[in-house]
Length: 127
Image 1 (cartoon, helix red, strand yellow):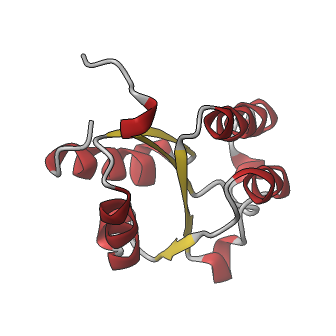
Image 2: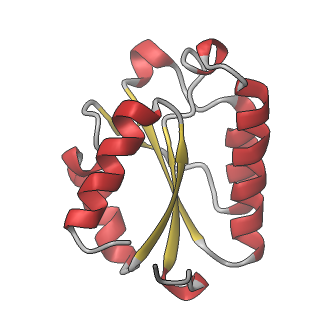
């Protein structure tokens, strides 16, 4: 396994949304940890991306994460209607423009959206 290098890394926060979080076991601790991760990546100058799945039905990113993003890198979610971020052209384009080789991935619905995004990132050479 290769070590992370902040110049090569991007943080991808996946679908931490208002209607999903309340049903996740340990959601308060998960939210705190993701918020810390967002703030820590800002301190280390690691770029951040954010996805939101079907906002009309699932709501926006939860307030604590949204606030952390607004204070650090900006709240610029990429809305998607597919499980993997790679199914969304805007996500693929934004990631390509960053020219990163490594991804730090955090989010919920790990068995679907996080998993499929990670699998697709490996297929494209991002570790």
